[in-house]
Length: 195
Image 1 (tube, rainbow, N blue to C red):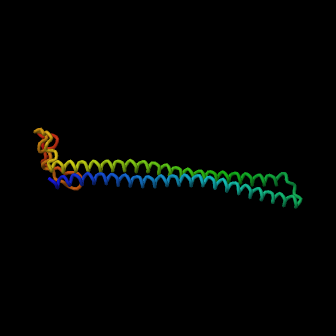
Image 2 (tube, helix red, strand yellow):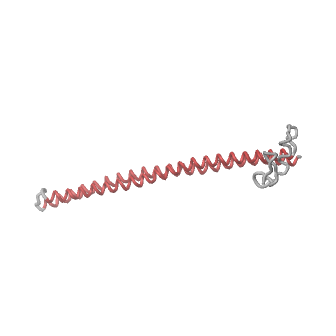
Image 3 (cartoon, one colour):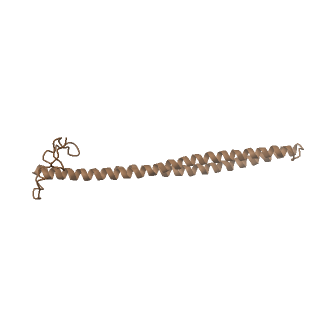
């Protein structure tokens, strides 16, 4: 009897410690996934910021280059009208297209990072849920094992039994984890045999 009582206590302790371990592991993994999501969001914002800085630098460089072209044309005595202005205008159109391409590429990169961050947030929630389920399963496993050992040790002998429930667990074969029933075990439905 003392062995069974000790096994019941160990089973309860094991269930509680298993639940604590599962919850701690889930929290750690979830925290890591949330940190990755935060990092990706920061990277997306940084990518957008750098794209704006690149476009500003390109604008400054373009204006400097255009000023240099205008001064070269003026020094050569070329009038800044007609085909010269058309050429400079085409340069500006090309600059605008380049800005648009950079902006689209930057937004695509940022949106990709944000989508990955959202996936990491979902992963964090899934890890938390799975950890909670593992913790609950560990507690239930500990309670079931404790109940089994308590039953085998006679801790429940004072409880009233009916003919339908008497001997229901006598043929239980304890394996690793949950008890395994023998094939000819009468279980839940005393008049039917498991096949």
